[in-house]
Structures are given as structure tokens and as C-alpha cells.
Image (tube, rainbow, N blue to C red):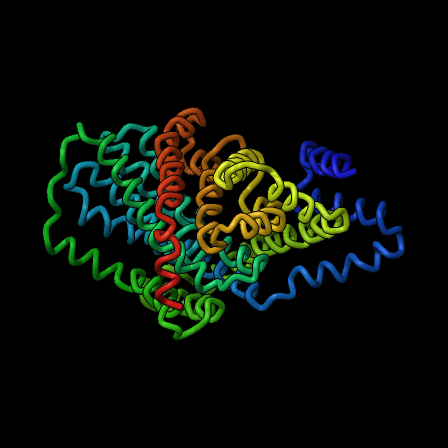
Length: 425
């Protein structure tokens, strides 16, 4: 019966039905089959309400709104200019500036797509004009954009916390060191691949200071949002509200890049993105309810606990599963489909749930740059129509290898993810 239930979900996905409706349809079918019509109908609204009945989810539309405000207000453009002025004279300097801008913009918005669009639209033509190899440029922007879900604030971290009841503040903290480390590793790839390019001239000091002054208010945003959470000034949800108000202030009154007429489109995009996330949550809850009836999580946990194999073999299998799913589904869907099953296994095997959060997010980053459904791949093709998909895929390979290396380093040194949460409780 479990096999039939799973095949139904796969069939719905195969015919192109959106993930939220595929999960919901499969869940409702299973509820009718196991509970009968009247009982199933009475449970659907209850489960849908329960899926969204979590105060921490209030932060999701606020972070989405903040991301849309900053994207429309072109705050990321100044960040790229700042990095370019200060770093362009280094080996691979413009590439380093691109990756640094991606990391900073990720810390501001928490959105991988917004990061890739904003930084990529400026960085790609500039780097190509200065002789950088097209595949390297595309790979750097695609990989740099993925930092949006690892460096806090991060919507996937909020969803992870909502599902597992882990502290969102600690989950945010766990992504800081791995996010910085991954950025450094990306930069090392860029320096190595750009080693034969001629060095650019050092920007005059007055230009660098002018760029710093221009970007100051944008740079202050992650300090306000993330710093406020770390110091206990406000909760992650309150931080989302503070960040949204701050974003409106700097885009309206400081940079003056936002107009009242822009708010309608911003709010519309926010509603669309938030509705998509919450629709997936409801569909996954209906699907998960049937899995609970069938006792699938318990059966899988007991099976894994009963096999005579190292817990690291199971861990590798989990990573392979996440990588496979990342090739056919987007990150939000993967979290809701797999986490209710994987989380009890992780706890049973003695792994730290805060640490596993980072491992899962890096796998989801890989999902953003792996075909055939890697979101950032299609985003890049949209902003760089002269580039072929094969060039984009070829460009992300070394950066994907670096992500795999970071997962290995986190296995050797789990403190990379758990140290900061442990000292900032």
C-alpha cells in the first residue's frame, strides 16, 4: 500500500502538477482510502489549519517582503560596486567581489533567487567584459546565490525549526561559520581559476571610500537583523519585522530607489511567494498525515536502528537521497517531504539536530544548482540569455564539489556548526 501511495505522488509530479497540489491530492486520496469519505473531509481543514498554526511562521512573509523590497530597491547593486572598488586589484578580484556581494546580500535577504538575480545582473556583463571565462562567471554567480539559504536569515531554517521545534535563533547561528567558510572556499576556486588573468588597477582611495559610504546603510542591515537576534534584543520573528521597516526606510529615504507605485508589485510578489510556501506546507501535512497512519516514520526509524551498519553509512545514504531529490524537486518541497521521516532517524542515530540543519541546507544548496530543476540555473539563463544551459551546468561543477567538501569538513569538525549556537544561547 505504501508503494501504491508513493507511485501516485510520483505520477502526479510526472504529469506536471505543482508540488503542493501533488502532495495534497495524494494525501487526500490516502485519507479517503484509509479513513472513509466523511472522516477524511472533516480532517482536511483541521490539518490545513494545524500546518500553519505556528507563530514562528509569521516571519516567513516578513522575510519574503524584506527580500522583495531590497530587490526592487536595487540595494545589491551598491554591494557589488563596493566589492569591485575594494577587491578588483586582487587575483580574480572581480569574481571575489561578486562572491562577497552574494554573501552580504544573502545575509540581508535570505533569498537565493533574489541574490542570483540582483548580483548576477551586474556581475555577469562586467566580468565577461574583463576577460573572465563565461563558464566560471556563470558558476560563481549560481553558487554565490545559493548562500541565501545558508547565511541567516534563512526561510528554510525557519521551516526546519517549525517542523522540528528547534530554536530558530540557534538554527540561524549554526549557519554563520559554515556560510563564511563556504564563501571562502568559493573565493579560493575563483582565485585559482582566474590566476592567469591580468590584474586590474587599484581603485583610488576616494572612490573606495565613496562606495563604502554609499553602501553603509545596506551593510548595516544584517548587523541590525542578525546582530539583534544574537544579542537577544529581539526574536527571529521580531527581527523580520525590524528588518522590513528598516528596508523600507533606506530604500525610500536614503537610497530613494523605491517609489510608492512599486509597493503594489512588491506586495503581489510577496503574496505569491508566501502562498506557494504555505500551500506546500498544507499539502505536505496532508501527505504526512497518511504516512503517520501507515506508521512509515516509525517503521523506517526501527529499520535503520535494526540494521548492523555504521551510522555514517546511513548518513551517506541520507545525503544521496537529498541530492537525488534535489535533482527533481525544489528545496522547500524537499524539507516538508523528507524532514518528518529523516528527523527521527537523525535523533535515533545520535546526530545533533542543529548540525544536521546545516548539512541539509548545503544539500539544498546543491539542489539549486543541479539539473534538471536547479532554480538558480534557470534564473541565470533568464538574466544571461546569451549563455547556454550546458555552459551554466559546466560552470557550477567545481563549486558543487566545494559544497561536497564542506559537508565532509562538517562531518570531521561538527563544531563548525554547533560552536556558535553553544556560546550564544
